[in-house]
Image (cartoon, rainbow, N blue to C red):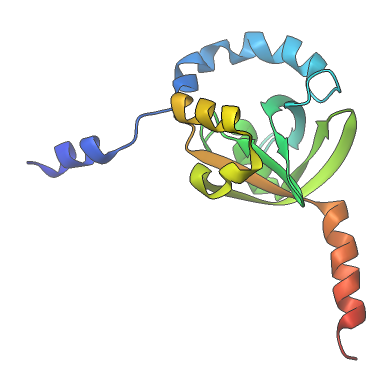
Amino acid sequence: MTEAVARSRTRSRPSLFSDLKPLTRLFNGPAARLAGSRALPFWALVRHRGRKSGRTYSTPVAARRTTDGFAIPLAFGETADWARNVLAAGGCVIRWSGREYRLVDPVVVDAAERLDAFGPVERRAFALARIRRILILRDENVLEPRRRQLERRAPA
């Protein structure tokens, strides 16, 4: 067996959403109006800055609140422009459930590592849709009180 054949057999299949990528321009406009509102708690609006243009963008994404930030399943993978922008900038602002959060320290992890952030129905949907990666972001406001608390405890 050649190396190329062996590699193609071990490579995971792309997410089901990768076939829908051309339709995102049609979907994102209307979805952005509702994403981040209390009406759709699973949807959030990520505000990020373009890596090259410096322009501000808003992208609707599925997101779940965690104890110290948010978990965002990467339906289009970590090469999606919005995800690359967030990773390059080191954070973003997310509007979720009617509130805005400043998020920092973005990290992409295997979905299996953070499936605990999602309910059983969502976990099953990720498996069916072949979503393999999740973007983890920390809430800046959750981190600051912890940092101050640790600084107070540290010996002078």
